[in-house]
Amino acid sequence: MILLTGFEPFGGADSNPSLAVARQAALLLEGRGIRATAAELPCVFATAPAVLEGLLATWQPRVVISLGVAAGRSALGLEKVAINHLDARIADNAGDQPIDLPVIAGGPAAYFSGLPLKSALQSLRDRSAGHGNVAAEISFSAGTFVCNQVFYALMHHTHRVPGVSAGFVHVPWMDAADPGIADHARAVAAVAELALDPGPEPLLAAGTEH
Image (cartoon, rainbow, N blue to C red; front, side):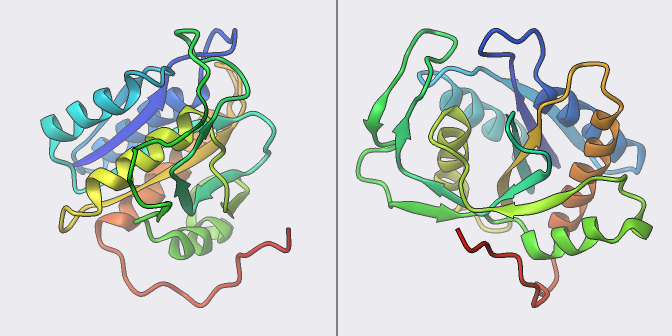
């Protein structure tokens, strides 16, 4: 089972491409005979981790990819690291704005993604692979808003569960009618499929200088 999550709209927007991408990717996977489901998370610090944990308990997935939107980016962001830190630039949908607080008190400073990020990047860069014309990159900051909170909570929950691959992916901002949503759904479905049976990661430079 593959579980994909996206967020409800926030910040005054009337849609959230992360949820649209998650839903389309789940349909693509189901069409290939792979059990998959997509679910919405609230953009609310107080409830998002609990909703996620409920979904994990219900579905017992082998692969979990949580999706969020990064409005300032143009590439699909394969997130490498979740940090135990909240510092909200804006309030969430419940009006909460935590500043300089941990995601989980006493938790590790950070977790790395459990997804095969280098394999995914290599696959997505191969235009002949048929995953759509989507630019992708490995990102080393998932921010300090609800996306990072969910990413950290997801890794905190799953790193002790054998056989589960989990991580977080940011999609660029797209409106509800943008054809790019379908391309990004194909890309996310490809990442999820790779995570079902990951092989050795390729030696591929994907770091940044700043």
